[in-house]
Image (cartoon, rainbow, N blue to C red; front, side, top):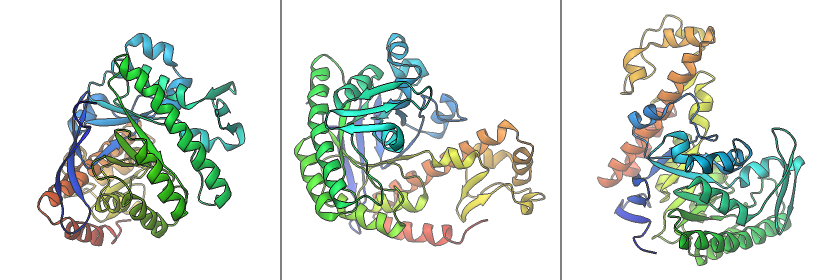
Length: 378
C-alpha cells in the first residue's frame, strides 16, 4: 500500500513509550499526539487559527453527527470535510459506534448493523459497517474508524462475546468497502478496533483478529467507559502489549493528564477526548498542580495567571480574577479562553512527553509530573 502509515523514531528503554510519525494525506503528524475533538466539524469555542497557533496537526470529528447534520450531501458538495470547515490539516473521524452505544434505548443491533433513531428529530436510520466507511470516504477522512460495537463496564461475558463477534465481522466488511474506495482514489486510512470488554481472554482474541485484518492502524476501544482507574490501567497495559509494534496504536476517549501519560507509557501513539473543552466551558482548567476551578471565591482577588509555567496567550494575558469574573457574569469569552488554555496545556504536556522519550527519561518525567499534579490546585 505504498509508504507505511507509521514510522517509529525512538523507543524509551525504561518503558514502552515511543515517538514516531504518522504519514497522512494532509501532512506528517508527530506522535504521541493528542487530538482535539470537533464533533460537528468544529472544536467548541476555538477557531481554525487557534488550533494551528497551538500546533495541532490532526483533529477528530464524528461520523454519526455529521451524517445527521448537515448530511453527506452538503459536505460532499463542499468537496469534503476539510473544505467544508476550512481545515487543511488532518482529520480522524469516529465511525459513530460509540454514539450508537450511548443511544441504547433508541437503537437495535443486528449482525447487519445498527438501527437507531436520531437524537435530533427521532427519524429512523440504519448504519452498517459499509455505510460508515462510505460516509467517511465522502468526508475524505485521513483516518476513518471501523463501525464497532462498544460495551459498558457492567457487560456480561456472554454479551461481550456477542459484541466481539459482531465487531470482528464488521471490521472485515468495513475493510472490503475501504479497499474498494482506495482503488477508486480515496487516500484515507482505516483503523480496526479491539474490543473484548474487561475479560482478558476476549481482549487477546480481539487483538489477534484485529491484527490479522491488517488495517493500517489499530485502536483500543471499550476503555474509559466507567471502570475504576486501576482497571483502566490494567487493561490498557494488557491490550497494548498484544498489538503489533509496527502499527500506530490509538486509545479512544482519554483526556486527563493521568490517563494520557499512562497511555504513552504503554506505547500508545494517539488519543482524543472532549474533556479539555467541556471542562473549560464550566470554568475548570488544567494546571501543573492539578485542576483549578476558576469560579471559586478564592480567585476573586488573585491576579496571577492560571498557571505561571504555562506559555499560552491566556496565561500571558489574563488573571484568575478576571477569568472568574467572566465566568460569574456568563460571558462567552470564558469558554473561549479556558478551552484554549486546556488544549494548549495538553498539547504542551504531550510535546514535553515526546522530548522526555527522546532523551530516555519518560518514566522519571511521568513520575515527576504526576507527583505535582496530584497535589491538586482547587
